[in-house]
View 1 (spheres, rainbow, N blue to C red):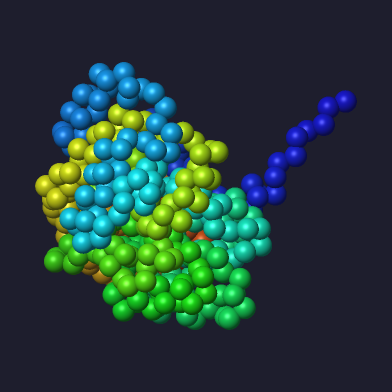
View 2 (view 1 turned 180 degrees about the vertical axis):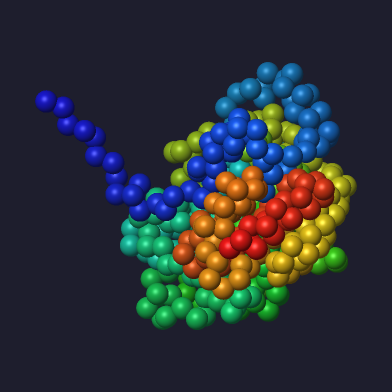
Length: 392
Ligand SMILES: Cc1ncc(COP(=O)(O)O)c(C=O)c1O
């Protein structure tokens, strides 16, 4: 007799991953000769910066770089992170106690739930939002409290609106501005009232900030630590993925109070052994030249943003010009379902976008475009999406 292992309930509680089925279908369409334009994942199609490639190549020749990194990682990376925060946001962090290297920010964000929530505690999860928020909450056996991001609040999570009994049980809130997928940005007064609510209720604030460098038209996105009192409650998550087009290298960092960093470090030491040291060496090189490295990345996205917005408007979409991120969050006319629209775009026109409902039911009515191809391809994609709209 054989007994099938039981799969934990939490596996069933996780909603399907929005990008899970797309790569396979894309391969099939390409094999069938379809001219696919993939605007799905936020993953640019350009080479990594030279400075990163050279620093990685040099580091690979040092045998010490092939050893376990552990949570300490490469002190030079911690120091470069600390210098970056001081230069960029005017905030000092001790490299050894207030910085933690991550295997990409995603794992740190998800694991942070284990460091802050006990079973049954509430974690505030914005919808639409990056999937590791709900994943982290469910993994920690916390109760995700879904907060719909809608135009009513300018896509901001207004913690002060939550019922008192929810706030009382809340241990963690995930926030992400500049936001994926809505491209919303957070005004300073919003951040101040959010930090105030977190301090009042002892809520840990996971401030997910991978798009802080991807901003346009004079807008400068802040670090949460520019807000007074944030150090008491927040851990901020950063990444080399988007700013420096190094998505596959899997390197990010957390920064914040020693107490929160220590708790996350302890959790992580049971799950992973830190990012590849040679990648951390490359990360240090890039961060020390962050301003010059990010400038061409932003310029490229700005050109694409302008081309895509103009072409989408011409194709009949009512799209706003985002001040940050590499995404457009495009409203659909009333009655057009986002899942059906995204499926038709892929199957009938070979354009891959993410329907809002892939991020959760409350995000229906929008679709997301990632600005990951050049202007000409974005214009072609917009024209094809216009045809789908006309038929919807
Ligand atoms: C909002 C948000 N947070 C975090 C991440 C994860 O970035 P990383 O590559 O550092 O894991 C992403 C990636 O798409 C994201 O959109």
